Image (cartoon, rainbow, N blue to C red):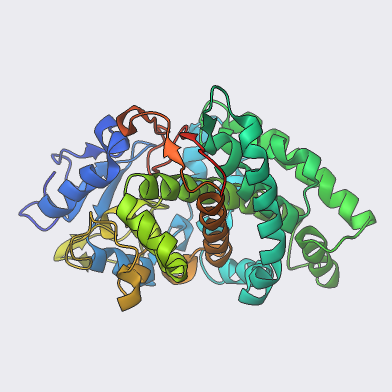
Amino acid sequence: MTPAGDAETPGEPDRCPFAINAAELTADPYGGFGRIREEAPVALARVADGRNAWVITRYEDVVSVLTDERFVSNSRSIPGCTTDHHAESLRWLGLSKDLVPHLAEAITQLDPPHHTRLRTLVARAFSARRVADLKPRIRALTDELVDGLPGRAVDGTVDLMEHFAHRLPIAVICELIGVPAEDRAMWREWSHGYTDALSLSRVLSESTAYLRSLVERRGAEPAGDLITALIQVRSEDSGRLSDTELVTMLFHLVVAGHETTAGLIGNGVLALLTHPDQRALLRSRPELLPGAVQELLRRCSPIVFGKPRYATEDVVVAGAPIGKGEVVLPVQGAANHDPRRFPDPERLDITRSSGGGGAQHVAYSRGPHYCLGAMLANQEAELALETLFGRFPELTLAVPEKELTWRPVPGTRQLGRLPVKLGAEA
């Protein structure tokens, strides 16, 4: 791994890229990418579809790439390029022609003005006012799940990922969108299977067929949910939202609203269980909870890196030349642990954001693709931690930390299971 600014130039065939899905990076992404950050802040990597990408790991450079209009999400936005490389990679994975658009044309894969048009349509559902209005319902859903935890115990142990962290976000996003409660378990399975290449085709086929049917039902029987609102937008201006766009948007809202928030809750619970001083501080000063969630996002976000970007012209990043059309991959997880921006970055400090530090994380990205559901995810995590630790102040891990398993999904840091002992209720 050598910096792109060395004697060689980007794209030379004699470079030796590292594999972005290497086992050591998946097992210890923060440590692995941290070493890359210090040794080669712009390094060449081989990504999942076999292409090379320039991995960007320092905070300042990651923010620059995420906010620089010269870096785009879709290869067709590169002047002179008519090929959608992401769509090609999906076909390479074996997805059928009718399923490819549901991933290739997701809002995260688009650039302005198409991205702006779609984002504007759905942004109101995640406004500060809408999220505040949802708080009582989210609290009720949280209480309901926590009430049921003792009954889930087997030999005194409960898996918080299965019975809490995954169930709360799927309940919230399904209720917001308009998915009936009896179908939430099905969506948990689809959302989980989305990250598995072997089940991706089945998941997309089944879930998009379900959504098309649900959209048809909501067209005949409107309700006060997001599906109905988006159908009304389409009815008012038929050129603004196609059937494929609507189904694609709904699919990604459910998946994004579930998996990442579940990961945040699980990682956050584990961090507080393994840092009893911070847990005690939070218990004595509950007003620190919003800042604590921001520090958890910085230190143990479930997202290590997100979508790649393409350079629309020759660009220099950290002194390294990136050629027009080349791929860059900003690694938010490495940026959030950059000691140049966050002093003593491996230390969990729930007061860090009180000085503006922790809140400067890039877990939710930056720029035009800043996470639409950030406020909703923050609120879910805050209520989850407040309720769980408030009801079960003696909550402990049921196994040694080193025995915990992590999902082997490149670019993420999410627990497979989180076995705990609840202890006595408060």
